[in-house]
Image (cartoon, rainbow, N blue to C red; front, side):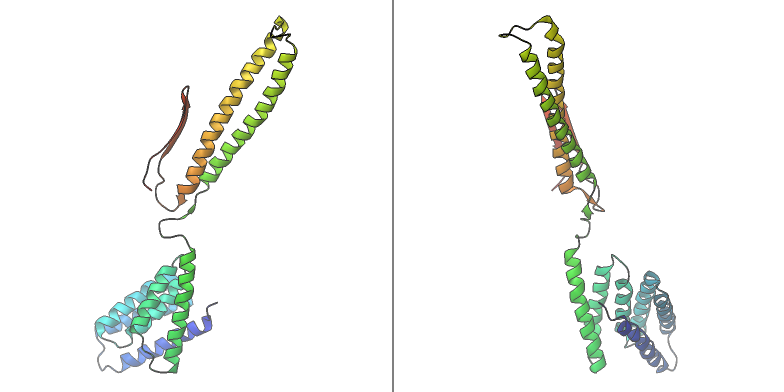
Amino acid sequence: MRPLSTLFFFVSFLTLSYTGAAAAQDAPSPAAQEARRAFEEGRDHHNDRRYLLAAEAFERAYRLMREAGLPNAGLILFNLGTSFDEIPGRERDARDAYARYLEEAEPTDEASAQRIALVQARIRELDLRIGAAPASGEGSISPIGPIVLGGGGALLLASAIAAGVLAAENDAFLAACDEGICPASARASAEAVRDLAIATDVLWITGAVVAATGLVLTLILREGGGEAPPVTAGCTGEGCALLLRGAF
């Protein structure tokens, strides 16, 4: 858990540091004046929980402070990191800002050393979180694949039920026949057995193709991961085929 009180204290500390640096100049440059306004804007946005606007303002303040040659410019990178840190999905941006802060921060006293240690610990935590999350562009598993796979499973189950009914009907038909000779009254039963056999084959083949398609989609289709490779499946009188077009 992040020590938010420490983070907000550092925001206030940064304000004092910047004010002191600006006051040390007899005639602040336009860039320094604009940097201070950008910093105060970012501070106000952060305090009001408008974190994306705060991050934009802190980034602008950092750039302007560097242009003005102010020595405390790197401290704003901490504020930039804490702003991104409050926005879900922006963990990588927060980590990058913290890393840039470490490149410019110097442990001049015990307080600054503690802040650097805090940032280092936070970076380790973010590394663990980023490592457990899907890579950029990969996204999470799309529900389409499991839904199609479930539909294929339902068709296979229906084919199994139809096969059981077919077996019962076929036994009844054979019982009506004597040594392969069937009476005319058994003709309707023979037609029913034939129709059930066709339906069972269609259900089984279609269910297998749909289930295979669902499995492939489950493995390759991701939400937020870009356009999915097109998949085509179908059956003809000579068999069934599954065509997947794309790159792996």
